[in-house]
Image (cartoon, rainbow, N blue to C red; front, top):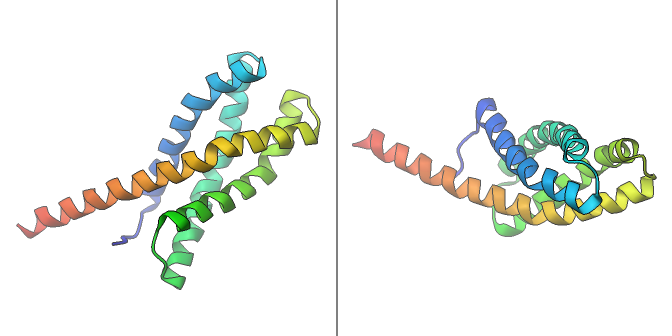
Length: 147
């Protein structure tokens, strides 16, 4: 079952994804990299704003591709979704991280690979869970309107 997502739902989907990611990544990044929580927190927020915008655009394109090609949102489809999303995000984040942390592009790239290794399973898990909870909510809503 697949129902069209409104712009508002897309926004809250992306917002929930990013808020949880910041809550995990800012303290973990500060601890692992040896920067202050404020310094890493601001970088995480900037990356989050980029990622949230990319998330909304990318998911719109993903939904369009699904309608056009007719595939199901299987675990494999979600894994491909996460991988392609992360590659696009990497192209935006590496220069930002290099500038903000005053490190070279190669170091920022290696750092981003580490971040992507966290976000690949996080993205799959978050979206898989979101899709299943959303479907349950929609089915429950349909049943209520039928009674």
